[in-house]
Image (cartoon, rainbow, N blue to C red; front, side, top):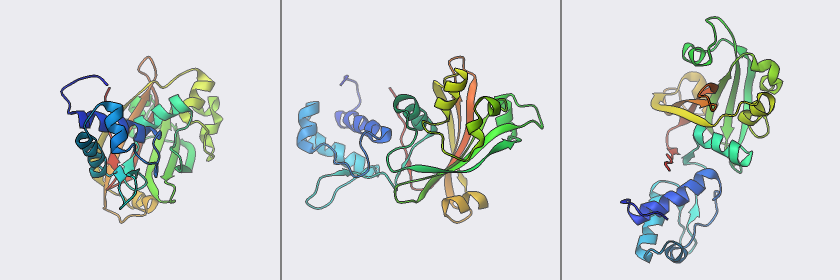
Length: 243
């Protein structure tokens, strides 16, 4: 582990946090013990205890009397578009174990102005729209999202217009059909109040606080491959990664 000014316990917590977000450490998995962390990272047991406490404070782990500290993410972790793109490109799986998506719409529709501007869709033109609700292993909805793609992809990737899940995710399907590879994502987030439709899909009351994110997947030339918007209910942590 490289040396920097970040306290050692936060450096180790960041390593485990990345493994949790990537799904390498899954819900219910035991975290490395305090003794194992101390040995693996050459830190004191007191520092290793702070690692566990940090992840528990973030809602990513829980401890039970007389049992190991385990990963706990089903009700607390919000995986961002960047997380899902990385998973699709590195593992071929866009969802973590236990998660699944229900595609609620797949069609050609006029995109919002901000989406059309990014995709280069003419006013009044149509783009491919895919709407979905993502659920966790407890069958509880954890987010609802809409992805938009250039209209010409309807012919190149006809699966985009089907309400079946695309195994490996849409970025992989688009790359296979067109050679365009989404290599990075840009994302912006804000707090908002749930609309009536968002509340219905998420099983919350209209007006409830939600996290709203808009994302763009771009290729090596910086051109948008996918533009999307997602909404998650309050109480779910979004984890930012930096290298």
